[in-house]
Image 1: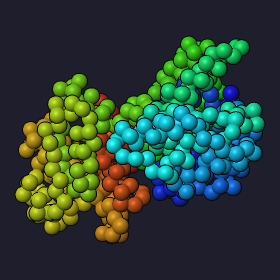
Image 2: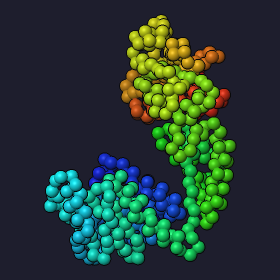
Image 3: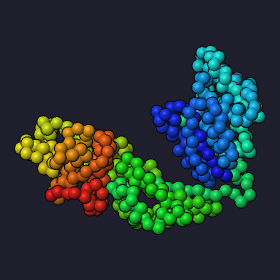
Image 4: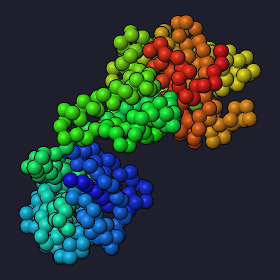
Length: 430
């Protein structure tokens, strides 16, 4: 069985809203051993919707649709589906009763416009919605199973879990030969580019290999995607674990976790394990480093606090940076980040401290210090060092990547690893 996912709405097609439904559904289908062929996003256009649904059901065994089931004139999924099937719409008394009850329970009459939500294509059926007013739809079209669910994520997820997945599981479990196991894992790294990662992974990325291995870059992270597909779930797990181990061996400490793990969470866990603490001193990142750390539950055990010293005056008064250093070298310099890191470590009584100062843009750059120039100071019991990076992208990207660099620097320090392994810290200063 193979699936196509269709998301409906002008806001999705125009890029005003990110489609998270398809990603979630694809993950759930993979757990069942159902691969997704493609994701499609369609605007609220009746002819195009009808054509898309008709075509999708000729290309896959299963089509999951989300969106377009509301009560307003731009909610056209019912009409589009009926047109694709060549049938009319009829009213489901049970769905209408549920709609009426939904509003009665809230002490208000049902608007007449909501009555349209009880309509479904002749030959299909409605699916109850325990979280909202829009019933789902279940039809067969061109021999393909097609489910339509609400676009509101929490309503869609609840309906899928309650009504869609059980039907799919029952069919798959009853099929001869059972169903394949598809297991996936995302291995997260920071400090290496996609091409460098691919070179290190080498034959692991052969597309004929099982498990398959691919790379994805997002917000500075390079993630390694591993997918194992086998008839036997135990064999799929064994293959997944073996390839994961090979990826770790090739990428070493650049790997900081799997799936939803964060760089900050791994750093905090290592600090707790080592009984160490860390302080932060930030200028261009404006508290991003400290914010990422305190997002981790339990971080109070290792993070006494930090400073956001955007102005030179605060760098002097809060961190003890000498005015002469600022006058001679400027805030974005080796000397100043070293003084910031030393001041933060001493004042917080921490084992480690990291300082960040840079030119995030879009203005403020010079020939000597172009936009994207960021200096990092790292203070440890052994002394203080400084590192420079040239980061690409706009202001948000520079600040975000600088904060992640600071976290990875701290993580490598705690692990006893050389910071030269972090791609953007190739240029260093004593």
